[in-house]
Amino acid sequence: MVADATAAHQRLDRWLASTWPDLSRSRLKALIEQGQLTRDGEVVRDPAESVRPGARYVLTLPPPAPAAPAAEAIPLAILFEDEHLIVLDKPPGLVVHPAPGNETGTLVNALLAHCGDALPGIGGEARPGIVHRLDKDTSGVMVVAKTEAAHRALSEAFARRDLERTYLALVWGVPAKAEGRVEAPIGRHPVDRKRMAVVAKGKPAATRYRLLRAFGTACALLECRLETGRTHQVRVHLAHLGHPLVGDPAYLRRLPAAAARLPAELRAALTGFPRQALHAASLAFRHPVTGERLAFAAPPPADLAALLAALGRTQM
Image 1 (cartoon, rainbow, N blue to C red):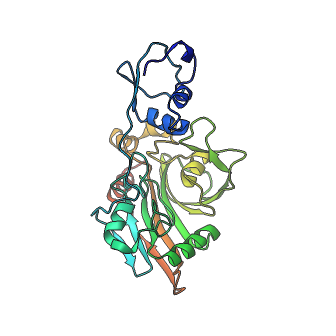
Image 2 (cartoon, rainbow, N blue to C red):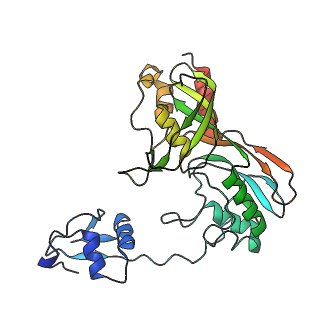
Image 3 (cartoon, one colour):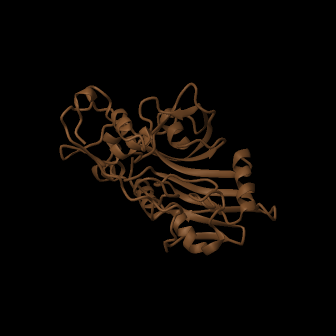
C-alpha cells in the first residue's frame, strides 16, 4: 500500500489500524516490532514512526499459531511425580509456556509429550498444568499440576504464600548487612515496558535475603526467600538494593567498580556470564491431595556451579 498525503505526520501503527480495520492497533504494533512491515523494501520496527507519504508499505502476516501447544519430546529432569503433580528441575534457557516468539520448544510442549492426554485443558489451554513460572534463564525447582483439583489447590497455596521457596543469587558487591529484608512495590517500568521496577504505585513486594558467602568485595552469594511473588521480584529488589545479579541483561545497567579489581580471567567469566545468575534452589509445600509436606532441592546447574567454583578458587 502506498501512503498518500493525508497520512503525513500520523503514527505508523495508528495509520495502519485505520487502513486495515480487521487488525487491532496492538496487533499491528506487535507485527511491526517483529519486523513484519517494510517501507520501500526496508524493514521498519518502530510503531511510533511517522508515515512517509509516497512510500510503499508491505505488511506480512505470519501463519496463525496452532490453537493449542504441540507435544514435543524434550528431556525433563523430574524430581518427583505421581498422578496429581510433577516436580522438576528446570534448566536455564527453557521457556515455561508458549508465547509470541517462543511458540515451540517450551516446558509446556515437553509436559504435553510426557503426560500424554492427561494434561491438556488443566489450568488453561495455552498454559496447561502451569501453577507458577520461572524466567527463561532462571533455573531450578518447579511444580506442575496434572489434575484440575491439584492445579486449583496449588494455585491457592501460591496465592496464600503457604509454601517455602528459596533462591540462590550471585550478585555484584556485598550487602552491608549479612541479613536483610527489601520491601518495595514493584510495577512496570515507566519507560521500558519489558522491564519491572520499584515504583510508588506498584504492587506490594517483599524479599528476605541472607549472605551465604562473600567473594572479597566483588561478589556475594545470597539466599533469597520471597514473601510475595511479583514478576522479576528477586532481580528487581536486589538491583534496587544496589547489588544486581551477575549476568542480568535487564537490571544490570553498568559494570560495578569492583569488577575492575578482579583478575582478568575471572572478570571475563563474570562479565561474560550469558544469563542472570539466579537459581530456584528449593521448594516445599503440602501435597494438594494427601496433605503430606513435600520438600525438594536442586543444585545449581553446571554453568553457575563452574562460576562459583572459579570465584572460590580466587584469592581476593
